[in-house]
Length: 242
Ligand code: GLP
Image 1: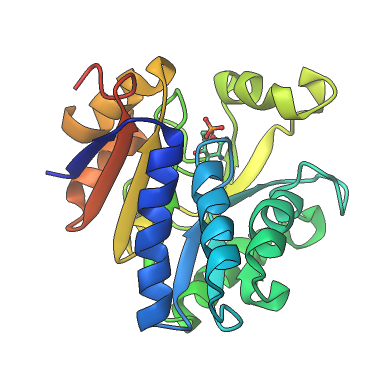
Image 2: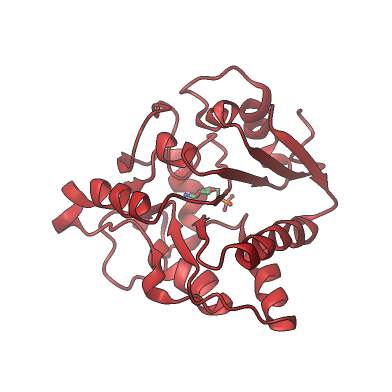
C-alpha cells in the first residue's frame, strides 16, 4: 500500500517534496523529473525555486518530462502545457530548456508524437521521480476513466468534467481543447518513484479511490496500487475519505 503522508498545508507538502527532489539532484545531477501541470504541483515548484535561491545547485543537467499536453492549441498559446512548464518550472528553477520535454500536441505530427515521446523517455533512462496531481474524475495526467493500466503516450478525449475544471485557464469554456496527448498509465508506472499530491475536499473521493478503492480502469488513480514505490501527500481535507 502506498505511503500516505498527511501534511498541514500545501506549502508544507511543497517543502517536503522539494527537499527530496533537491537530495535526488545532489546525488544524481542528471536526474530525470516527471513534471505535472495544474494547480497542485505549484507549491513544489515554488519551494524548489526558494531552495535553489537560498542555496544554489547546478541543475544544468537535470532533465524533465511533462505528463501531458493539449492537442491543437496554436503554437505559443499561454495555456499550452509547454508554456505552463516553461513559466512555472523551467524558468524559475533555471533548468536547461532543451532538457525539458513536453508531448507534442501539434496536429500535423500527432500520429507519431506518442511513440516519439515514449522513445525520448526511454533514451533518458526513465523517470526518477514522477510528480502527480489527480483530477476529480480520478485521472492521472489526462488518463480519464477507462484508460488501460498498460497504456502508453497517446491521444485521448477529455471528459466534460475535466474540460469544465480546466475552463478557468481559458477565456471561455468552449476554448478548452477537446483532445490531449498524455503519458499512459503504463508510462507513468515505469517511473521509479511516484509522488501523488492532492489538497482540498474536492480531491477526497479521488484519493480514497486511488489509495484503497478497487483497482479498476474506471478509477485511473488506482493504478498507483500496482507500483512498488508510491508516496501520497495530502492535506487533512483530501485525506478525509481514507
Ligand atoms: C489537469 C492535469 C493533471 C492534473 C489534474 C488536476 O488537467 N492534466 O495532470 O493532475 O488535472 O489539476 P489540479 O492540480 O489543477 O487540480
